[in-house]
Amino acid sequence: MEIINKIRGLKSSTTTMRARKTIKEEDYCSECKNYFRKNLLDIEHEIPVSIGGNPYDFRFFCKSCHNKKTNIDIKIINFFKKTNLLIKHNSESFETPLTKEELIQTYKILFLLIKKGELYNEDK
Ligand SMILES: [Zn+2]
Image (cartoon, rainbow, N blue to C red; front, side, top):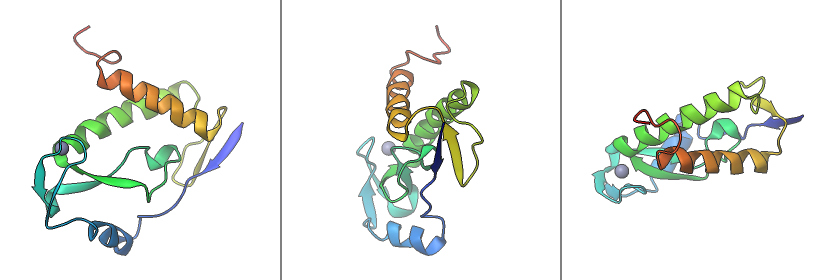
């Protein structure tokens, strides 16, 4: 069992503000590539910070793309908890029988499958 301490950061509003300064008044969403006003873009982490992703490794998503991404993330994190890949999960740390790299690889595979509609597809 590996104990993984989450990387802290982007928690304080000053850090978030500094991150937001890296975008222009109008900039594009990294997902749909459409342009939006700065206040309509959210900070988004490809690998969720809650599973050990780097909080400083971020990009900007529009609200719609961010919501879709978050909904998939919630499904994967719930799956990880249900299957004991995430144990004693709290804001500081978690335990996992995998290595951090294996957990992230598993996340990426599940993310692709859900996005393609191969998993959790209500129509099937
Ligand atoms: Zn978008």
